[in-house]
Length: 92
Image: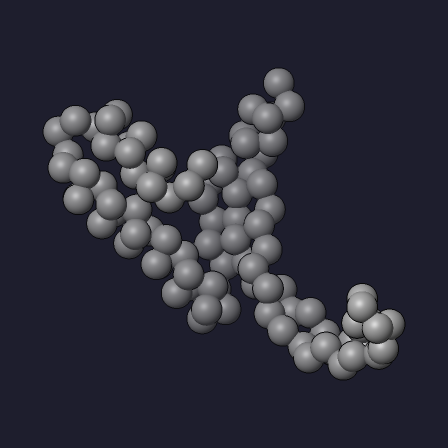
């Protein structure tokens, strides 16, 4: 599902809201999650899951074309861990 499909489904499920308002709500939620992760915070949505940031340390990788060694810098990546209710729903 893409962001626009999510907005469309929410707008259809809530006919009392304008689509532009639903789009603003979804964008605001995603922006707040992004800002929290950028600040190093953890975002937990009960029953759905938790977003956090993990650090990948620097390492030596390989160029797949040439096989030459390449230094890969340390970086931060977003990490998502599913919540119990989501896991149970997926596995039922």
